[in-house]
Image 1 (cartoon, rainbow, N blue to C red):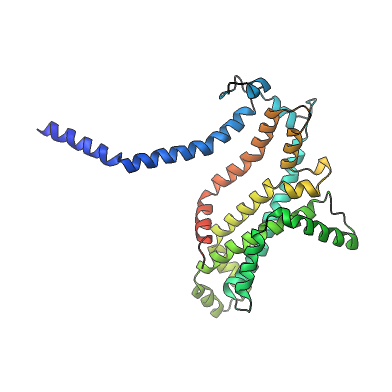
Image 2 (cartoon, rainbow, N blue to C red; image 1 turned 45 degrees about the vertical axis):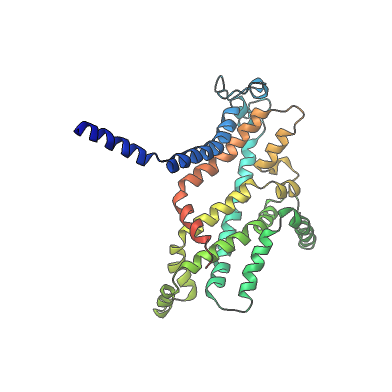
Length: 301
């Protein structure tokens, strides 16, 4: 009897743990994980394949060998088909990192003013920021190019092949969302803490530096990471504003290799892997801050 009771208990526990709802959840989770991870695996594995393995009728899921020819073509100066991809990586860093830093700095003061200060037109301002963000980048590129070209003629700088100008154009895409995210996060911080600090003699800037920013670290990390990814992956503005191959960012170079008269898909996959891995590593290392910052910043205050 005791053995039968134990068997029944084991069966009941098994049925409780693996219910129909849990089974459906597991299947759904597995489907989404596979749909997300498989393209990344295919990209990385294809960077080690030959042209025959990539272009064959039967898909090759595992390369026959870990060939480094594609990476050597991108990064090895001694390779006959050297692409100088390291320069493109450096150009992308030169554009993406300042874009993220400037967007965060400007968004701190702008979003704090919207969240804490009282002035006429505050609601209109935050709605206008959202409206600007809703416009596709292709609609803004012509006015931006025309405006910057006129300013450049008057001041004396060239709009094209200028990474500084490209950073400014990226701010038109990243600053609105940075302002919106930080505004919502600042609204979640209790105003009484800042008021107490001001009663103790702190100025407004000291309150921001000593009280608000330490409490808003998750949101700052989230905004910096989000704006960095936008600038890191941006193609359209870089394609319009950059003509010199020495100043190309990674997306432009990948497009150039793909459109080469002699297509080399394994080289494209290798370049895409080099472009993707740093962002993935950075994202995974900051996952704790990103989860907290995005969830709080996505709630309207």
